[in-house]
Length: 402
Image (cartoon, rainbow, N blue to C red):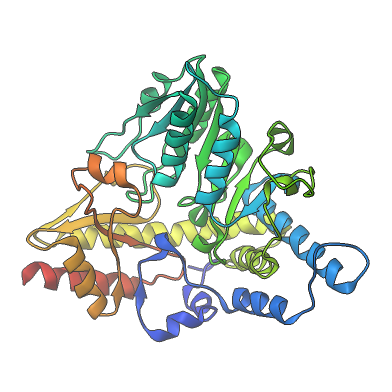
C-alpha cells in the first residue's frame, strides 16, 4: 500500500530479526528500536524527583509532561487527565476501590461476560466489599456480539458504574461503546471502558466514545509495560484515593502512587511517535496518528480476511465469532482432535507464535463453551505480513491433517 510500508516498518523492530512470525500481539507487541533507545537513554541520563532547580529534576518533569501529552494525543484526551500506573489491572482496582467508598446496599454495578477479567473482578470485588449488587450483561456466543439492549436492560437509577470493553481481547468484538456509555450517563452512572485491545488498532477519541474513564496499556502498542487511565480532569477531581499523607493532592498526580518510572514514560512517548510515523502524513501528532492508524487498519483488515479465508478451508478448524461484524484483527480458533495447547506448541516449533488460552477473558471463554482452557488466538499487528499469514495457515493445515 502506498501509504503504509510494512517492510520499512519491520526494520524498526529488532526482535523480528529472530525470525518468528508474531501473532501474539494481543498479549503484548514487539518493541521498536526507538522505544528501547528512549528507555535506555533515560536510564543513562541524570534524573531525580521532579522539580525545577537541577537539570535532573527538570529532565524528569519534562519526561512526565511529554508522556502525558503523547497519550493525550493518542486518545484525544486532556493531558491533565492522563494517569499512569503499574498496569491497567492495578489502575482499575485503584479506581474501583476509590469509587466504591460511596457505595452501599442497593447500589449496583454492571459488568459484561465479554470483558477481560481486569474489567470484571475489580468491580465485582469492590461491589461485594460494600454490599452492592453486580448485574451481568451477556453477549451472544454465536456472533460474539454484545447487544446494547442487553446492557440497557440492566441500567437503572441504582447503577453506579457500567464497565465495558471497547474490544474483546478474545474475539476482537467491538461493542457499540458510545451507545452503552450514553445509557449509563442517562441513568446517572459512570462508564469505565477497557480499551487495552482496541487502542493498537484505531484512532481512539474518548470524548466520542463517551467514556468517563478509558484504560489502556502501552505495551500493547509498541511501548513499555505500563497502564494508563484517561479521564476528564474534572472527573478525577471528584475522587479521593487512598494515598500517602505527604504526597500531592494535585490531579492527576494524586492517583500515581510513588515515583513514576521515568524511563518507561519516555518509552511510551517514543511508542506514540512511532505510531504517528507509520504512514507518511502531515499535520500535528494527533492528525498523523489518525492517518497512520487508518492506514494500519486497512493493512490489518486485509490480512485478517486472508487469515480467516485460509483457515476456513482447513478441515477441522472452527472459528469463533462472526466475520461480518466490526472487530479488531483477532482470530480465535480450535482444531478438531487437537487440544489448544498442543496446537500452540506445534505452531511454536515452526516459528509461529500464536498462543492458546483464555487470555484472562475467563467469563467469555466459558460462555463460548471453551471452559477454562480457551482456544488458539492469532492477532494481526502492523508488522504482520501476508507471507506470515500464509505460513500460519499452512502450519495449522499440517496439524489438522496429522
